Each structure stands twice: as C-alpha cells, then as structure tokens.
Length: 114
Length: 112
Image (cartoon, rainbow over all chains, first blue to last red; front, side, top):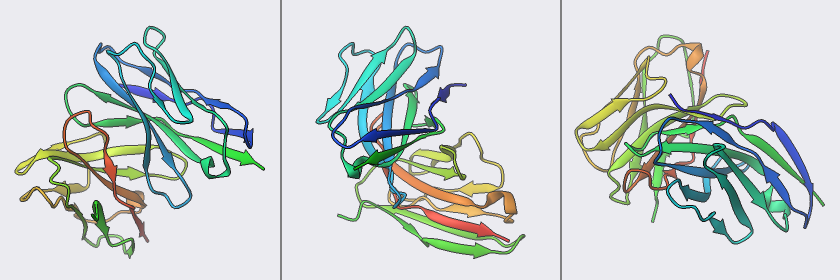
C-alpha cells in the first residue's frame, strides 16, 4: 500500500515571503499522480496543483509550484509571495494509475504572519 | 452549477442508530468517493465508485455501506453508529481516473 508522509505539522511564513512544504511518498509503481490540496478553516478541499509522474517538468500554478523528485519520491510545494489567504492546512495526496483512490498525508498547517 | 452537494452539514446520532449521508453531483462525473477526516489527520478513503452500479471498498470500509444506482447520487449508510465513527465526512467526484476530485463541503457527524 502507498503511504504519504508530511513531516512538518506546522509552518509559518511572513507575508510576501516564500515557503516550501515537504511531502514524501512510498510506492512501487512507476506511473501515478500527485496532488496538493488546500483546506482553509471553512474545511473546503481545494485543489492547488497536480503533477503527473511521467512528466519531468515541474507543475506550476501562478504562485504555487512543485519540486518533483521521482527517484527520491519527494513532492514539495513552494508558495511564493505568500498572502494572508494562503493560511490553511495543506495536504499532499497520491493517486495510482489504476483508479481514483487518493491516499493523503497527515497535513501541514501553514500560518502567514502579516 | 452546484458541484458536489452533501446533506446534512451537521448531525448528532446516538450509538446504534443508523443514518444515510447524501451526496449528489451535477457534473456527470463517473467517479465518486467517500472519505472521512479525523481531527489532525488527512482524509481516508471509505468507499468509491467508478460508475453507476459499481462500488468498491477503500481503506476504512467497515461499518459503512454504499450503493450507486444513478450517476448523480452516491449515498453513504452507517448501519449501526459507533463513537469511533465520529468524524467529518467528505464526498468527492471526478470525470475520470487520476483527474482532480471535486469535494463537497463535508458533513460533521458526532456519535454519542
């Protein structure tokens, strides 16, 4: 079974600065998908970014980018120019190529200081 | 466009009671899933469906039943509620395997 580990329970960043959230995963598969989801206090689950394992290029969505290291099984999220609205729980998730079953990490709480 | 709609938003049950959490989506998605989120943890998959008439178990299926008679609806049934099932439940849907899932707003369930 796949496992996803987020080793930082909490992180804080100053507004306008950059922060990186870590995620590692364990799998024996070669083709899979990785996601970062944001959960604000409203508890909605919001997709931040998606990475396909067969693509070497790191995904980017505006201020959000990933550093995908397939050999190291690492998938970190970089948030640039942090904003107060970025404060939330962030979850890393793994999806194998066989279906639609997401395996989530335990989450990282991000605090943004004004 | 409503997306994924879950009802109710909050529910309190007594141990041993049964209930159904409703989930409906209006995006014509084939894939639907149920997750639970316990305090301080990520979501864990309970059951999922890849189309009408097809369901399968996820990581934590015990104590829950599902059915998928239509593309739109995917109800989750608690057969005999237990305090260990106190959690926030999320329903999600997507148009295909490995595609981003759209989540409902969740149902907070407390079992006394």
